[in-house]
Image (tube, rainbow, N blue to C red; front, side):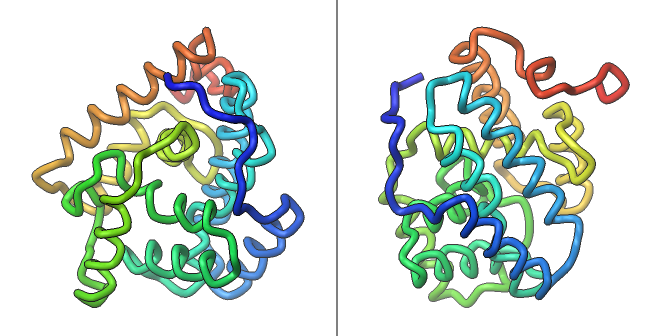
Length: 206
């Protein structure tokens, strides 16, 4: 895995991230809050083992789905999070609101309905996505999103099946699964150990 600097600019503090998440949850309560907190735990734990900034990893995990505070949306939550974080002056958080949904940088990689955005919004997001060269933080939150259920860390396959049962398949679903498997292997190599014991995934969740 490519080495990354410990410092990451354009993020709110941990206290600010907690406030932003709570504000969004108050607006639209749901299991996405616990999912986000699980992702934050996973990101902080894995990131610390890989020499990344653990607090930045936690903040990004807390905020990756912040766009769900606007309501029960599908692809629109990506737009809401990206635009909201940019408006607040947190471009690194905005970037993660976009990249976490795309282990492959194509629209069809998205697991869900993309039609709740306007064509203009989709075009803007995909143009922005194509301009990004993924770093370790992008990849880490993509992986942690795929390891996180509301009731805690889980195995990758269980989460991926859960998402597919709710959102269906696209032409890139299998490629998406393979991308997540590759991410897991890369972070295990960077950590120097298997991820499931590190995250406390108990045998009954395997």
